[in-house]
Amino acid sequence: MRVLVAGGAGYIGSVVTAALLADGHEVTVLDDLSTGHADAVPSGATLAAVSLHESAPVLADVRPEAVLHFAAKSLVGVSQQRPHEYWDTNVGGSLALLEAMRAHHCRRIVFSSTAATYGEPESVPIREDAPTRPTNTYGASKLAVDHMLTSYAVAHGFAAVSLRYFNVAGAAHGLGERHAVETHLIPIALQVAAGERETLTVYGDDYPTPDGTCIRDYVHVEDLADAHLLALPAPAAGEHRIYNLGNGTGFSVQQVVDAAREVTGHPVPVVVGERRAGDPAQLVASSDLIRAELGWAPRHTDLAGIVRDAWDVARAR
Ligand code: UDP
Image 1 (cartoon, rainbow, N blue to C red):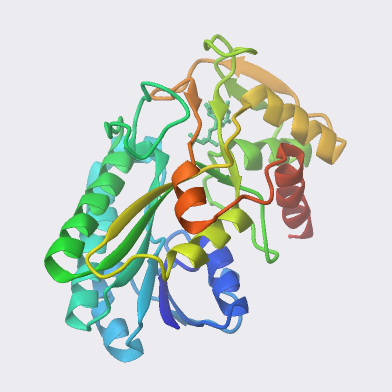
Image 2: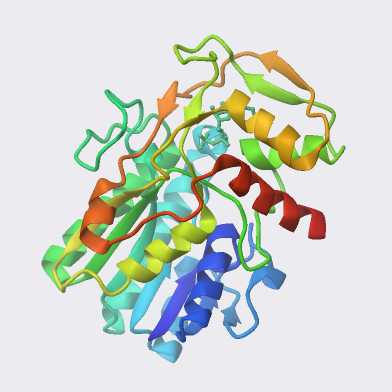
């Protein structure tokens, strides 16, 4: 298939681009390189270095049969301080992309949604029919696009899938996480192990969990790529499906720190700090729906394996 990957120079988009190429698809990456890296775009894909707002001429030129849409701002803290950037890029940019798709008769899309659309869960594991009450602008902006897709499916016959990622981690195809401002737990733990940072601050150890630290669902980026390839042809015209993507097991911050120590063989000194605003005690996905409907099954569910893949790619860099 001829596909356009919006945000294909970022962490997840670049891994999925590599998987699409390996699967025989013809890929154009659209990315304004605001947070992505041109050198992360796998060779074999063509890069159009423009923003979502400028996507119409690219669609006119490429005439894709499907779009995979990863392009977004994704820092929860910044979304609270500078919400206009999140509404402009995540919502305004997505609207521009959908309108360009409509104008150029491309109606198939897989969209990167997030667990942050749910907010504080009433119960875990979280299913797709759980209430969506985001607690930050990032989650609200992603939820707005989910709603947009539902209406485009109904009104314009779009075939759409929203994949709600939980905590994406690991590395594949030599591509891993590389953010100018790193806020995620696993890359930070590995930076401490590598001696690039002195300590890791554990954001609270008084949560109602077995070891007192927060529990998250770490899903391997390669398993995520599998899900995109399965989701791409799945919906019929007029259908918008929503699937959670997690590995099915939660791991605590303390368990991640222990895995980083074990995998790297280096000390990872920690200090216990205050809770981070807006952090729920537990976020674990039920991925039963995508398993049942698309036959997806994560292959890398072992925490140490996920951390090891991230470490190997970070070290190679
Ligand atoms: N966390 C932490 N110290 C850090 C970064 C993260 O204790 O330096 C915790 C955070 O409070 C959360 C978990 O690690 O419970 C995962 O956070 P991350 O930012 O990686 O992902 P999120 O769950 O916020 O999407």
